Image 1 (cartoon, rainbow, N blue to C red):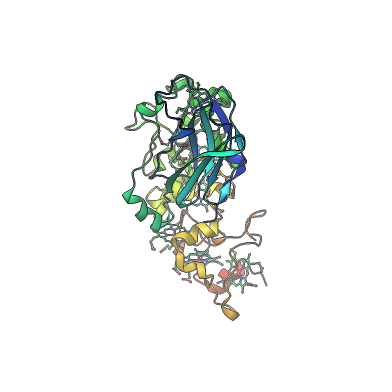
Image 2 (cartoon, helix red, strand yellow):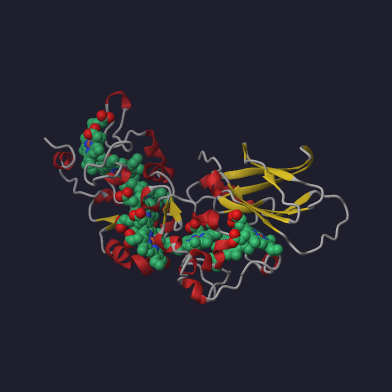
Length: 330
Ligand code: HEC
Ligand code: HEC
Ligand code: HEC
Ligand code: HEC
Ligand code: HEC
Ligand code: HEC
Ligand code: HEC
Ligand code: HEC
């Protein structure tokens, strides 16, 4: 995965924390979140720095090889919150502090991004603890300024700012095509406040959540002869980001790349037709003849959810001639 940290996701905010620093040593800053050597299951996290306001006037943040523009530290503040975007697997994050343009301190942390679409990352992350923010020890450091006990009136906030999640999680909503309930900041439609074992957790597999609003589709799929592996076991969020996406249909990446993550052998492109010079059937970059305005992908021929035809095909292929001709007229 090539994932450049997006500037869109970055936000800088200074939160003047009132706790007095008990240590007298001249540490320019400490990284309080995320903890080094842990893993997360998503690519955007907030970097929280606790500054010694007197010793530092600016910091730079580098994620792997990408450096964010320098951040000036307003003199009255001690907490600096900064949204960063990580890549898959292990990430090196470095923060450098400056005073009068001279580097005075530097700190590094490692954080791992685990993806259900990447088997090597699933294995590697097993040795690491998962980073969970919403536990009382962490929340207590923020509760003086941020609302952390939402009530159910936030289920349907009148405007985004009425959701208490808004003050910290705007970087989750930076995608081009947000999912309708997330766009309305109805975060609590999906993230349990009261009943959950863990604060804001979601069911695993996630399908019961999706069923509440997409029950008609899910029931129709269940009624078909064949269900696709991950859909059948209710892992809708393996393919879909429930918050939003830059791609059509809330998919986590281009549909063809998504399919090839699990069907690795299809990545060679030699599928359906071997073609001269080993060139296979197109699966991107051309219009879908059956759905106007959409790009042709693996999903042009296969339904990612379910089908009444063999191999999840969208049309009967018992006669190859008729089958191919349904898109290749004449
Ligand atoms: C002294 C008050 C104060 C404390 C304590 C505080 N914050 Fe903030 N924080 C703020 C204010 C004010 C904002 C701006 C809120 C807004 O824009 O709605 C903010 C914004 C943020 C943002 C958004 C940054 C961005 O631009 O995307 C994050 C994330 C954040 N805080 C996390 C935390 C965390 C985590 C803690 C506890 C470790 C914490 N804050 C403690 C006052 C505080
Ligand atoms: C004080 C800031 C703050 C507020 C307010 C806040 N969060 Fe978080 N939340 C964080 C931070 C920091 C993380 C760690 C991941 C990251 O950096 O994005 C996190 C992580 C999470 C996670 C991942 C699991 C975990 O505990 O690490 C979920 C789910 C979540 N938040 C949901 C919510 C929802 C829903 C709301 C609103 C009801 C909310 N948060 C309000 C700061 C906040
Ligand atoms: C349609 C259901 C749904 C809605 C609405 C929703 N979430 Fe989530 N959220 C999930 C699921 C499912 C996960 C588990 C991880 C995943 O699939 O990305 C998750 C994970 C998260 C996480 C932690 C992991 C990650 O992907 O960053 C945060 C933080 C989070 N949600 C915040 C929010 C906030 C803030 C809102 C409101 C703007 C919101 N969510 C709205 C379903 C939802
Ligand atoms: C609170 C209601 C609600 C929940 C819960 C919900 N959705 Fe949606 N979803 C909507 C609405 C509203 C739309 C837009 C209208 C439509 O396409 O039905 C939508 C649209 C979508 C789309 C189509 C987006 C597009 O651009 O074509 C996908 C994909 C989707 N949702 C997936 C999910 C998944 C996966 C879950 C479970 C994690 C889920 N939804 C849970 C309300 C919800
Ligand atoms: C293997 C990946 C994958 C899984 C798993 C998956 N989807 Fe999808 N889904 C897609 C793709 C790809 C599209 C866009 C289809 C297209 O481009 O024609 C889509 C489209 C959708 C749409 C909008 C169009 C429609 O068909 O109504 C909804 C709603 C939706 N999915 C919900 C779900 C729900 C709910 C689940 C879990 C039960 C789920 N998806 C599981 C890949 C997946
Ligand atoms: C998360 C992993 C995953 C993703 C992503 C995924 N698949 Fe699958 N797919 C499976 C599993 C598991 C099976 C069932 C086991 C098997 O037969 O190999 C399967 C089976 C299939 C089958 C054969 C069905 C049959 O009758 O044997 C087709 C066709 C297929 N997938 C197409 C796709 C397409 C097209 C996409 C992208 C939209 C996709 N898959 C994305 C995991 C995935
Ligand atoms: C032009 C239509 C078409 C496109 C595009 C297409 N397929 Fe297929 N696919 C078929 C047909 C027809 C079959 C069944 C005949 C066969 O086995 O070759 C099939 C079978 C499959 C199977 C099950 C049998 C096998 O070969 O493993 C999988 C998995 C699969 N396709 C995945 C994909 C993926 C992933 C993509 C995108 C890279 C894709 N398909 C694009 C038509 C297509
Ligand atoms: C769901 C629609 C669909 C089906 C079914 C389909 N194709 Fe295609 N095919 C396309 C599209 C779209 C293109 C790219 C646009 C074009 O060149 O016309 C394409 C292009 C091709 C090409 C040209 C490849 C190139 O690189 O120039 C060949 C050859 C081809 N298809 C063969 C087949 C065969 C054989 C079948 C039946 C097994 C088939 N197609 C079934 C949609 C389809």
